[in-house]
Amino acid sequence: MPATSRPCLGCDPASATSAHSAACRKAAQRARERAHVEHLRATITAQASEIARLRALLGASA
Image (cartoon, rainbow, N blue to C red; front, side):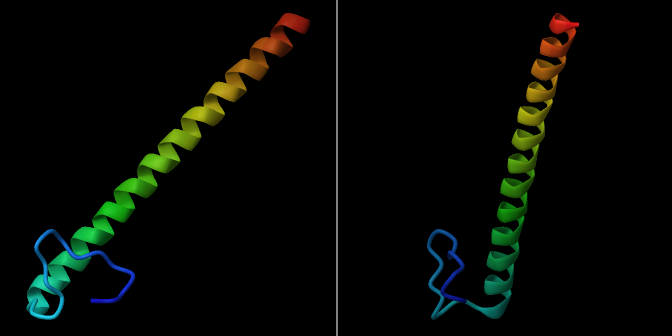
């Protein structure tokens, strides 16, 4: 396994089978993808809140 990937709990990279290593890599990739999606959701939510706040300010000043 590459030094940058994290083995699953109890995974010994030196003795892991190639099938196990592939499954471990896929699971790590899915976890990274989920984290990225959550980050994007949080960013979009924050931007939507900021847009709503700015619209309210513009509406109050008009």
